[in-house]
Every structure is written in C-alpha cells, then in structure tokens.
Length: 187
Image (cartoon, rainbow, N blue to C red; front, side):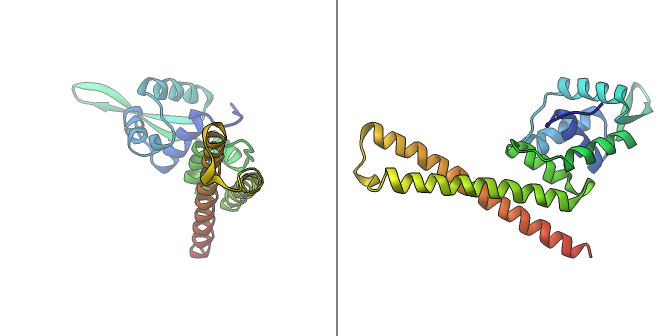
C-alpha cells in the first residue's frame, strides 16, 4: 500500500521506527509527543494499525499476559520501512507544519540529505512569500500608524502573514542548521 501525501500511517511509521509498541503505547506517545503536531484518537490509531497490518507495513508480536487479554506489540516491517523511506524522500510542495514536523522526526529513517533539501526548499518558498508580503506592505501601507477602519484591518492581516512567514523561515533555518551540525557529528 503506497500512500500519497501525509497520512496517519506515516506518523505511526515514524513513531514505531523510534520504538515498537502496543496500540495503547502508541496512542499515549501521540498524546505526549507526536500529538503536538499530529493528533489521532485511540480508535483511529487502532483502525489504522489494523489496516497497516493487513497491508504488511507492520508486524505484530502477540504477547500472552496472565489474567489479561494478549497484547499486540507492533514493529515496522520491511515494506513499512520502504514506504516510510519513499514518503520521507517525496517532495511535498504543499506540506504544512505538521507534515514537515513528522518528516523531520523521521529524517534519520530515510535520507537525511533529502530531508535537508526538502526543508531548504520550504525555507526558500517561505522566504519568497515573506519578501512579497514586505513589498506589499511597503507599497500599500507606507504609514501604518495613520490607518483606521478597513485599511487598518487589511494591514493587520498582512502583518499576520508577515509574522507567520518570518516564523516559518526562522524555524526552517534552525532545522537546517541542526541537520547540518547533525551530519557533521555523524562523520
């Protein structure tokens, strides 16, 4: 099963690549860490795990427990690792913060150089948009302190866009610096 774009399956593959676990443990991880940028209910996680098991992306080790139902411990299978590597290497032109965060989290399970290239591409796109917004600000709002009513509201919307793009560029620069430093440490 090959997926396009980001799906819960990819977030699960990243999490299980970091550490095998039961559906319950995986749901707890989502609540505490991955859930900061990708949320999923326990029911969604169990449904997707079942689908991934049927597709061969995860392997299940059934562990017998005294006085309790057997528990299923999930690990990423070879086809799951291949799907994760494929998705990590796939350019995502429309990726938002959530997808980029999951790709960054999974970068070491794929090609770190491809992850860095993807982050650089997104940084460049946000920097271009930021420059465009700043040009519009300069051209259309030369005296923002004198604005009132609709023009002020339009200006504030533009300022929100500028701040979001500044934040994205700054975050992606931080990621690229870390990936660069991490690559040096790996040598």
